[in-house]
Length: 178
Image (cartoon, rainbow, N blue to C red):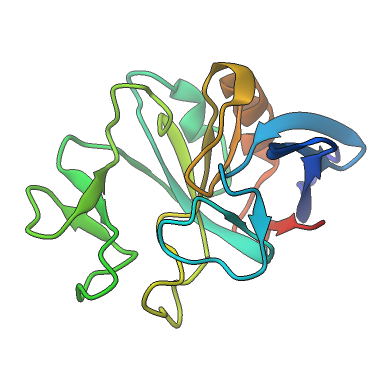
């Protein structure tokens, strides 16, 4: 990994384990979790698949009380407060956007008890333009123990995230391949 930063993180499924992956950052490879639906070229809301796509990292969120490394990056990072949510209803005007909770439509709470979003980077999947039902809240975040499946995101350990964050910028692309 170059000190100048990483332009591409390449993600592929781990052989024989479609919901687990290998993330290559420069010459270093890290384990990661993928969606329960594996990798899909036809991502749909609720299918649990990780999109087969190149997605730019736009910005991120972090819990300063839990993940202080969230400040050690060139990315625009915002703290996660108790009122931060992410809308997941395709027919809602704020579909696949951050919302302030309480919010009338179904949403994901960003300040999670399981700490998966203590460091959460927003990928540009289905943001501009937004297409109803093509998937929301595709993030690069922290993994559960054992790299159990995500709902379609890419997830790494807190140690790996802390190592990568200083090398990431809004020019970094997460490229999910087969």
